[in-house]
Image (cartoon, rainbow, N blue to C red; front, side, top):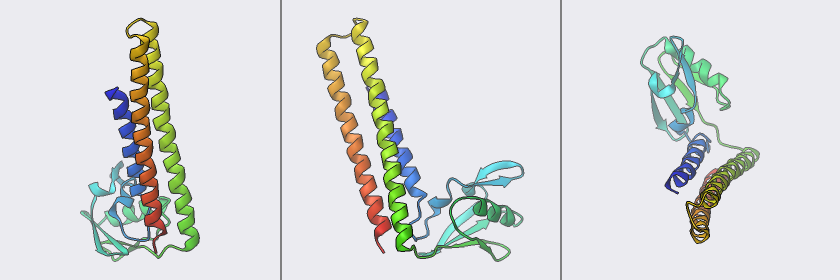
Length: 180
């Protein structure tokens, strides 16, 4: 049972990581977490090649540890699907986050709901696997039918708990995005 709860928790953590990359019109360094920069032929995370600071609510400043990385960082940001145009002053890459339009907010809210549904599907698939395992144990004579019922109830309670947590996350992120 603990193994399946751990898998459900991973689905929740994955959703949380996805939500961290969705920008809400405010500068958030986590938006750069999935971007890889070509660092001497090796794809490296942004945190591995530069210092990222937030000088104000709508600006991110990326200060590479090596000045020649400015162009590589710019290239990686342009190639990503963030929809941001990097500027550089020769030493730093600066990202300005424009105010989100109403249409873009609604689009992001739909995307948030879609990612939440995908996480729920993952949790339900884990529930199905857990239930199949319990049924196999019953058929093999390892557990009784009463024990099978008890385990299936525990699995369902865990599933309900994680689905409720996902719903809370979806609501919180949607509210965050829709707040002007």
